[in-house]
Image (cartoon, rainbow, N blue to C red):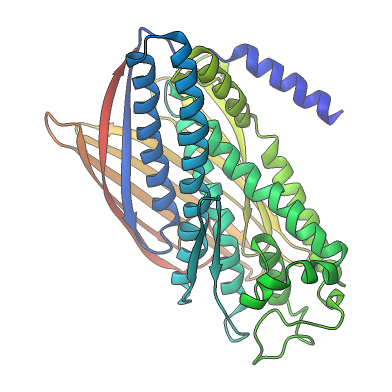
Length: 437
């Protein structure tokens, strides 16, 4: 039934997706900005815009400067496989995951980390030793930082997907990286084997544990979350390095909490995996490699003057696995916006809330973006909030713009934002280019 449902939805969307017209004019703004640690939000946005700028230019150059059809196809395949998938994977996979994710969260919590890249492969490691004195919530967030960064990249791609008249046909790569690779791939590859046989898992990863006693991404996250609820108090000595080698490693997995969280992670990332926006990965690949379409027009459902499209994000939150259920809107006469409902938690405490994000509010030479988030933290029995605004100024007779962002939030987890309460901010610049097709 599930496969039939996906097949029907995929066929419907495929039939509806129109290509961006070759006689159209497209204006796109690319932004780069930097700011408050952990810098996940600004870092992922900047990498996405830089990648978009590079890929847009390369794609159009191939179509405009290579006249031979056979050479065009060869150039597209080389561009797609080498530049967009391999080199792009190094940037928004390894660099983004390791540096903008784990490493950035480590700096936020005062942990020094030794970052190592596995070149020319797509892997990397953050080696760090941390004892039991470091709060479990800090280890939890450092562990979750890698998947958080690549999921934030997918969110930036999704915002652009449903915020403009056309998007680069490569955009599905970003969606796929964030929504699938750091979700289902790691859950099935790390958490499941550990829960099924932790002793064998420890033996198979003995060389890794000899350098770094913290398990890989989602597994270390779930274990830190479990520890933060006191499950491991009888196992872990306050002066020991986490995780200790036990005679029988099943002492770490013999509890309902960690198995329940595994089920919640599976559910959260399965929901993200059936996100309709992932269709653009397959359609965009087809449109570019076969027809040379550098841009495609995103499909949205329409009711009179209202266009909308749902999307799902998965996250490793401070209370457990979460989903952000987004609905993106484009309404005639007003800027594009997104509303979402947020839900997650664990067997003891729940988290729920929502938010709205307005974009591209143009007032003379100023462009404004605004964001408001409000959620309930079941563990602290408290309501939390976040308010953020970004203002961009475009210089006269120039494609360049200057932008400043400033926000304030409560202490607690919100994708891409600092964990602690208080002010945070970003500063950077933008470049607006016009493409004729």
